[in-house]
Structure formats: C-alpha cells, structure tokens
Length: 200
Image (tube, rainbow, N blue to C red; front, side):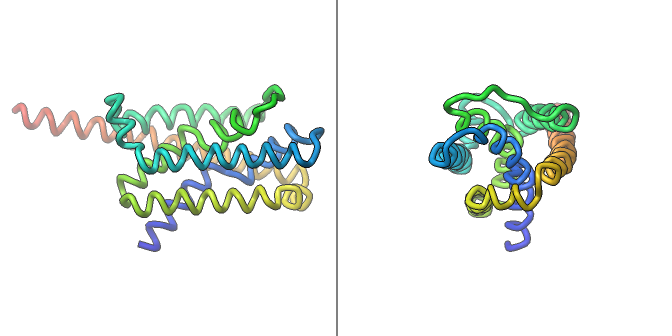
C-alpha cells in the first residue's frame, strides 16, 4: 500500500508541479502588495484543492454523467497536457494580469488541469479510493508548503534555476502526457477487441 501511495502521489505532484509554477506566480504578483500576494496564493490553493477533492469523491460519477470513459478522458487529458507542456518548453507561459489569477489560470489549468485530474482518476481506478484520496491530500499539503516558502525557494533557486526546473518538469509532463494517450488508445483497442470477440 505504501509503495502504491508513493507512486500515485509522486505522479500527481510531478504533473501539478508547484515548484515549477513559482516563476509564473512571482511574475504575476511581483508588483502587488504582500497581502494581495497571500490572497492570490490562498485562492490558488483553495481552488485547486476543491477541484481535486471533488474529482476524488465524484470523478467517476461525473464521467458517467457525460458518458465519458476513462480511456477517452485519458486521451483528451493527455493531448491537452502535451500541448501545455510543449508551450512551456518552446515559449514559456504568458498571461494577462487580472484580479482573479489565483483561480484562473494558476489553480486551473496550471496547478490542477486535465493532466492532474487524469492522474487522479487513474490512481482511483488502479489503486482504489483510499490511495487516490490520500495522494490528492498529500499533493495539496506539499503545494501548501511550497507556497508558504515561495519567496525563499525563488531566492534560493533564482530566476534561472526556477526556469530550468520548469523546463525539466515540462519534459516529464510531456512524457506522462504521451503515456496517457498511449494507455487510452490501448484501452480502446482492448475494449474493441473484447466486444468483437463476443460478437464472433
């Protein structure tokens, strides 16, 4: 159980990548008062946490409501995650500053997006509800700690170090995205093969 929890948690944290998000947060909040920065970080954390918890508790029901299989969700999430990771790698991330950047785009889709939701859904299916929920809670706690020491981490890494981490995480994210797409395609072919076998 511990090994499964570790694998599920690491996969979720790698895709969420709160450390790699630091340069974007700093760039969006650099000219804001300290209290406003804290408010945006809290908004980001609370919004991301709410999305993860909702999908942990009722993700499968939401998919069933819209008649979406996990295989299709995996492919769609993988494609969107791949596009986002390529954007990070090729040109970085630019967004217009706004009042609620904590919710959009920081919480969604940057911190919690199709990739992390897909990771969570796959963990729930593969390892069970308890491990899926615990991995989400641990990822949230890890993100909260990163946000707590965001300025210290940024000063330690420097702008260059933070950008390097972002690029490295983007490569890992792209690899995970491709794995999602391949797994989704495999699952669809397996379902097609099983249904064809039943017919004949």
